[in-house]
Image (cartoon, rainbow, N blue to C red; front, side, top):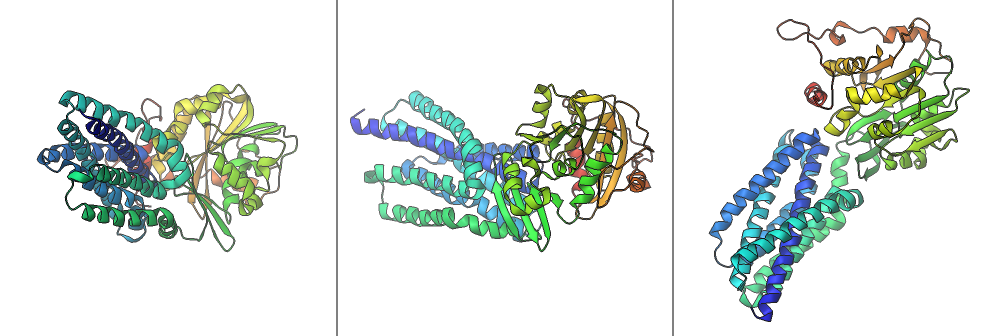
Length: 516
């Protein structure tokens, strides 16, 4: 090969690596969009990866028909990837806000398949072009595929550790679209001499570039207005972190915190939830010195705990530092938590709760489990027998645990499966539920190694809602929310504990909440 051919072949290898990075980023971006907007992360990632790979197979098959004008075919493939992939997140949020229910899922799956198919066309075309230049077929195939696979690793790392947390899903899509377009334009100029109607291709690329750059600078603001329609109240703060999407809303005096679209609390009635979580179990403890809160990064549970005299330490384990930072710095949240997370008695760890319990050797008088509902596989492990066994092992002999356990009304089987799972660790469980207007009827499971005389509750601090008389009422369940869940054949359902090896909670949760 002459020097020009060598430069052209190197460009092809670099182009294949870069478009591979872009393709992988789009693939995981679509999975993240599905997980956030449609729920059930494992299901959405499975569907998007399957559809993307199937699309690649279809695209590779279609590429057999591309035998001439290989450079032009590659350029227009990249143009289409750039415009479709670039606008994917923006349009997905628009579909969610304005389109009929269910159409957003169909749109996402169609986009995933289409971009997958276009990605499948890229490599065969580049391999043929490298072969036309003069590279032996086996060498051109091996080198292009090496660039593709290496680029895939880089794309995954970029998305997980930089693009999603720093740019968010809308800007990331536009940014990656711009990269695809830049590769196409670079190839266009490099092979200019063999391309007919060069100005038409260039003009089309410039037009697409204007659209993508406009989206990069203004798309997120418009998407924000779309997403605003998903929330009842005006949005004060919206942030994509490495772990989740944080949204804070406010309407008059009602401040609400959402994580990945799920309501965490409303300032109007959060006291009913947090007093049940904190003061109800401590009503059975004459003395409390060391308390562990798993979750609770908003600081409200910690605020309730600091009302107790004789407290030595409060340990808060919350995975996402951005939640704690918002709780400390946002004036609305700080008013609610009274700066509790910065109190000298409070120590905050940013770790996965499961990992913290595996590594820590501390023992506590009380453990308060204030974690999000088990609506995906990563949260499911925090509702397993293995997790609650770790909690039990970190309780002092007379220690007590209180865990939020979703709604016994809306998700009856889920609530009692959590109770069954905690019982499977050998602890005694006690069941309570409270009406929280912003949530509905919400359930808690209290547990201890020792039997608790539930007639001897003594509330030792001021409360807005909870009284000793109310505690007994909270233990009464109606027939439609009781443990005896009836199957369609009229038989009582036997509940199995949720475990790491045999997880059963996520599917039950999704089924229970699909109509609410």
